[in-house]
View 1: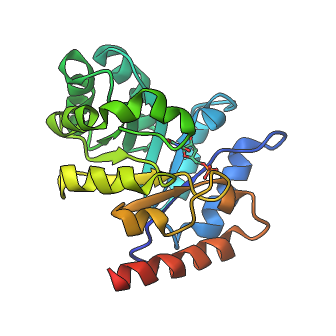
View 2: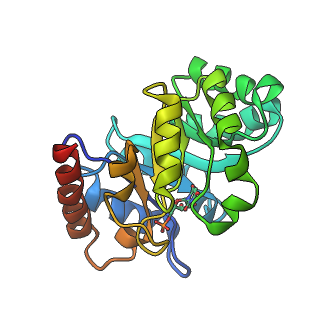
Length: 230
Ligand code: BMP
């Protein structure tokens, strides 16, 4: 068993595959080398049965982060309805947008998650360029909402390390930072960790490779070096 990996693999299946078989192959090849997995709409909308999620969550080792990324942005009651089936099938971390606010929104979701041994992750800035059009102007406000809600973690972009540095300075150790945007989106493995992130969310660089296990091993090595220096 490999402890200490900072990699969360984004399981976004390509066209033309059986999505559960595709995920299971990658999970079985990498589960002893990563911190966790993230599933989202590209997988969920192609499931034949929600029961398949149990097979998938069981294949991930028990102590992995099993993140569901629906980027929820609704009233609390509706978000609770949306996460319930995933909790039932063994998933335990859920991503929601922070811009919806705490009262009757994130606070309701967070309370429900905590009662069910699950944790909230909020989005405070995104990795694509459009994030600067609105979200990045209010990152501080979004962080305040996230911290007031008691979010376990926040998503901030590996593509803009200055935002990660800002987020870390602002929240200290009150929440984890999870950073996507590595590989096809432009950031390099290790960039986000160097800026203060706790985990790097990495999809295609690993999942589209002919040897996902090897890529994960190489990224773990890169991650260990900045951490040693830091
Ligand atoms: P990839 O490494 O293949 O670019 O995938 C990145 C993953 O992170 C995707 O699942 C995407 O939904 C997610 N993500 C992102 O790319 N940017 C964000 O700002 C927030 C995300 O959740």
